[in-house]
Length: 95
Image: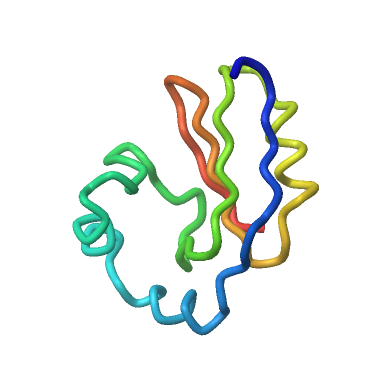
């Protein structure tokens, strides 16, 4: 199907599960997920402390097209991680 697609949330990740993942290095988690989930070596934090862990809202869009990013930010709940893939660039925020 071509065009925009917004999927409704089917489930919410329990806060205890998120806390359990907070202390595990992302490389270890990625290895357990068949190396298909990590953001890549170029992904870097934009802050000096803390980590990025939480249920993810994922967005795939073209560079310069931010409509779905705004929609995801409207849908995000406190503690959610918003992950954006825009062809050549990727980014993530925690809301």
